[in-house]
Image (cartoon, rainbow over all chains, first blue to last red; front, top):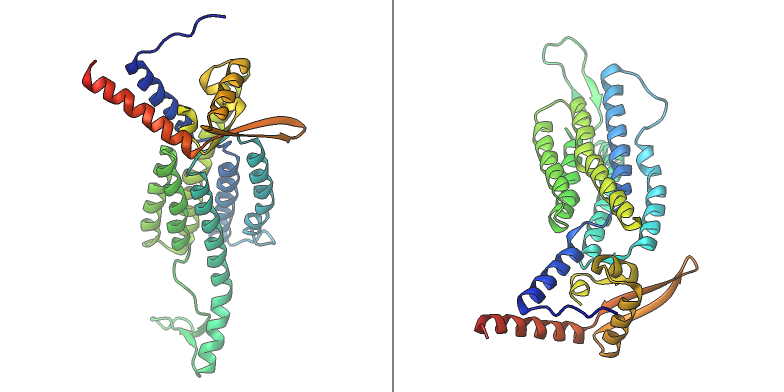
Length: 229
Length: 79
């Protein structure tokens, strides 16, 4: 058995620093979750945009694929938990942020689905309704349902939140960049027609999640290949 | 110990990969640290494979901090 090399004090401290860096360094994620949500949200946003611009319908609400994606997400989370080899101190925090984000998105969707009819009933009970009047008189007045203008802008703002937190905490720059781009898309969406908000949303999902997912996946597969050598 | 300071817990294969130690060598070190009360070791089965998870204890953190402080003071005095 070979003798252990005696380290100097300087070398010992350097080794300690290197080990701590190695332990905390890489963001241990397979990237599958990011790829899943990046794909699903960008596809749903893009199809919604196409449907509104080219005036066609695919026969069902494309956003159901987002709800359906919860099933594989649960399976992915369970599988990753099983195969995790090290748990970072900030893992629980980051996971909590994504969980709260998911609940908030669900809450926003619930708001969007419920509020127009609920508001209509409320204003009718007070004896008034919303009317759309054409300023040039080209068409007759129409009764409209209450709506929040440019509502998808709020989703763009929200998409940035867990992405930026994860990027900062895990020191994962692609997600920081994705989140900053999401904020820019949010600002642009405040000045564009609602049609374009969906296109901006598709772009946001790609930069916030899909591209970082590809980067994470490549790192993960490279790490696995190196470990198997 | 440096590795376990940086994570909440880690399994044996992770520690072996990061330290480039052999399984035998690492087992001996883990046992020594466990006997000294510096780490907790949990052994369980996952998918019929044994899995050993290590986690630093509060006593281990204290001992590690004291060790690092000693190293730093030694370097400061230049002796």
